[in-house]
Image (cartoon, rainbow, N blue to C red):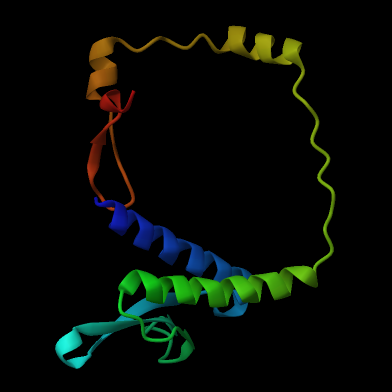
Length: 142
């Protein structure tokens, strides 16, 4: 997958997370992209947050048309980020009490697990599927 595709997927994910944080009552949404012919200059793109078609046909938010798809998604991210900023200022911040782990507790847990070490052959054969269904070899990622 190209770097541009990773960027687009990251933008789409963050836009959806922002939207769902601000509008949990309308969380079943999709990001739809529109492409409009712009004469001899090519195409313009627009990103839209819309209700899932199985639930209705509402459009909640649109970006402006841009000459690149990535720019349209960036604009939509800016809009949803502004919404999150506004919504989060209304929520009081709570301090999180994080306790450091006890070193003795960690040693005890490590000794009691008795995990078998994987052979090199097993490690080379390990594979997993990423979010897009591509198979990646974990052994080659070292």
